[in-house]
Length: 137
Image (cartoon, rainbow, N blue to C red; front, side, top):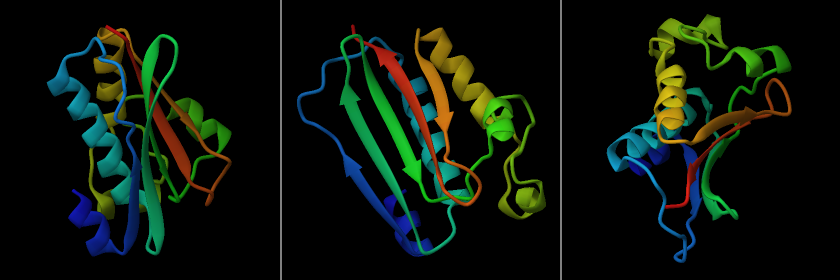
């Protein structure tokens, strides 16, 4: 996937500490969620842009953050982005592909693993951070 970021003219960086504790999770489903978030960042971040993956341990979980310089979300979009078939940028939906259910599925998968999925964005045109947590085992 890193090749896809470079091919599109995006900078991809990661911050992956080597001493992270193990988490309680279905590894295939956790990878599915992370892949969905990275694919969305690739899809919605215009070049030149940047995407960063950062992991960190908290007292009860490991947090995975995908931060990008994408189209951003206003507060209404942030509250609706996890709803089934919702697309924040309707003008580009067909051109960019996707069905509008990836984030809904990601949230359900994480909740089944006692995790959580959230989004923050300072506003339109200012990027977004999608973060999820998985509990420590």
